[in-house]
Image: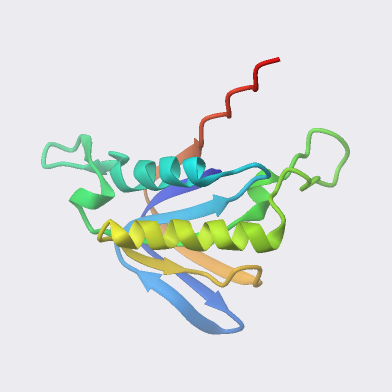
Length: 153
């Protein structure tokens, strides 16, 4: 799994002119699911998102996590994080998981975050979404679940 994590003052998602999610301070997460991602990737990503210390404490140091602060995030599905544009001019998305399985893993990630006591807004999977945000800092972190161990020969 891949994620672009942005610490925000506010964020919202609009689909077909209708606001489907909005929040004040917290995290906006663009989450991509790749071929071969498993429950282990989901568990790693959820833990990292909930506990990543990127919010400032009273001394202005990034020592607090989402669980320590607002507890609010919006998670938007983003298959284009798996776009490979190293060759040619049009990105290839062959490393993205097929939509049905990707949607299931995305929804399970959102539910796992809720089970940690976080308030989770979402977009609408595969919809044309308009995402608005006010980045705080700006603080933007790229996350990628650890690579799978190669099978023994």
